[in-house]
Amino acid sequence: MSEEQKQGQPASPAVSREAAEGHGAGPRREGAGPHLAAGRREGGPGGGGRREGGPGGPRRGKRQYFRKKKVCKFCVEKMDFIDYKRADILSQFVQERGKILPRRMTGVCSRHQRWLGVAIKRARNIALLPFAGSAAGTLAPRAVEAHKS
Amino acid sequence: MEERLYDLVFIVRPATPEEEIKKVLSTVEHACAEKGAKVEKAETWGTRKLAYKVMKHREGIYFYQQVRTTHGELVHELERRLGVQDAVIKYQTVRLDEDLKRQKKLVHKREQRAARRPRRPAPPPAPSAAPMGDPGTHAS
Image (cartoon, rainbow over all chains, first blue to last red; front, top):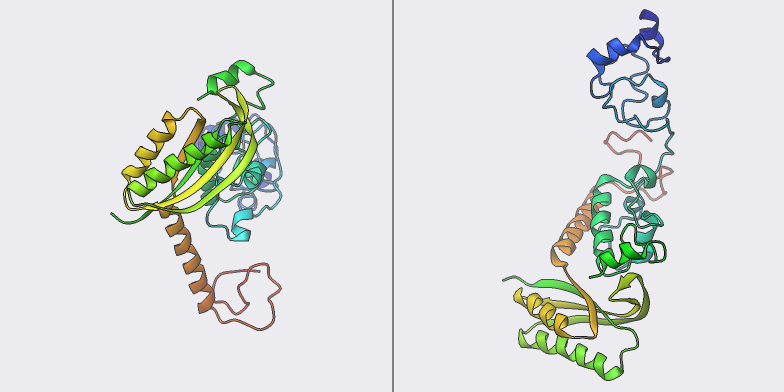
């Protein structure tokens, strides 16, 4: 257990005891000091290598992923109003099937992600963007009919 | 009531004859004129492919208007009249003045912040616009 504390790398079974008591919802307090700064926030580079402690940790994705340092496009362009009529801009943040892409994929900041969601939903209402699952009406016609206004 | 700005987008069935379209547009105009509203912008985006089928149509003619008014009940009236028209298959009204007010405030704040900082003639190498002598905690 002491060597774990020094290295903090391998996810050995003995860890589970510590995990259960100390780690709870995420690696807040950690015995391994040097590793603390690396990946306290979700998905930080090298943060996925640490032992998966608590069950509620933000990094219990399918695999550890590195995240390129993305900047929010809207912040860079200083766009304070995301127009719902600009389907060309909005479609960059939407999957093919119409689902809104999560922030961690697009690098948008939280404020703009909220406004983006509002704009996308407005655009969906006037058929500028598809609702999720109604892709072009060819795949699932029954689902499309259900969305008919 | 203070003045409000509304965005109105409505979609008309494709291949609708001209006079029907004119009728729809004049309905909207009359409704606005009755309540003393001002139509700031009126655009026709033409026939566009719809993202999903609306009333079995895959295309529609889009119309966009921006209306400024002090009477909030105008929206209800407009939507009612548009809903009555057969040619109109979808409509949406969005209130914009609060958003624009917020946008103006942010722009204003940003300009004030930029004006307060001492500007240097040479463009700074850092990606942000802040010069190096900024007493902030930027570690560029």
